[in-house]
Length: 458
Image (cartoon, rainbow, N blue to C red; front, side):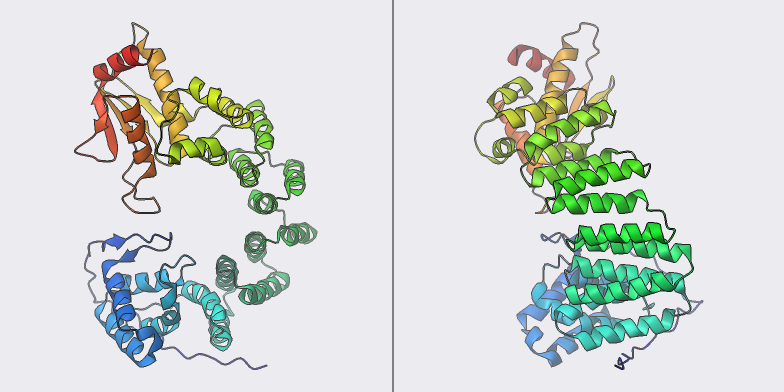
């Protein structure tokens, strides 16, 4: 079958006499779906398309697209396109304009041809049933890069990963075929490693860990030693599917290949158990981490505590909650209580989150989900009480709890952790208040906090 070639104007390079002006970074509007944040100009562009019903009127849509690209700097136009190509696009009703927008951008004088954009566009076209257009784009890239094997394998890697993220089955199967053929025919070890790496990870993303493990076996047969990356992906691929026996078998396989289990692998295992409410399996794994001296991380806390229904009901509810570790353990069921005990015993997470000197005692809760922030707060209070009871302890001038302002929350500006800590402060009648200069922090004088802890929480 002859595949049609899509003809796009290839822009000339920038004139070497052109002087680039420094532009301020355009303000971004966070996407609630977790996609690419939008600039205000791109947001207005999308609003105009929606308000004029241009999606259903190709002529109007093309006119608005032409005007937008002509009047927008490179960064603004590419921001709009990247948002539409994201798997978490918060404007799915506008996804049909991604291809015409790409076409118009590709004609701009400032545009430098970018195969990564093509890799992101293809699965969207496949999902829209525009297979001729997607195949034409792939053919164009193959023609341009046929003598640049490293660039070509990178394109196919981007393509298969993009198809897996968009859950485009046809696109994924086609991309897998292209990449597999290139890997098998190439004599370059670089090409083989990059290709195998993307094949394994993408198969796992598509819910096919068994096929991914077969690729790992093929790697070994073809003289390519699997890296920790591939083995971790297969391990987590089985775990996400709930195939715990296979996941645990992969742990042994990793050890045979000379890769000891580390914090990252352990967090994958804990997350997998938690996703299927297998709390009794999590306790022995935490104990194994301690025995092997594998350090806990903030993500370890997040994986474990997000899986505890009772703790989640405390931090998400509007009622009161236990204000000490011992009180918390007493009200939890056996499984959750055992998990909390394992976390708080010999954990370095609190020490890493806390800075203590004569001027300031700071607790940084960045990266912690609500359950983790709650337990770390309880541990922190216990630690402060213990230290402040020692007469020789130097009381810091100021005490600060850093919560953040919700920049990374699902709804920008609404921080669940900040809301939780505020509720804890109110319930415990803490003297700490929101800092007027930094609303993402709670502050108080060190001596005031010391007196409160000694007198109020005995």
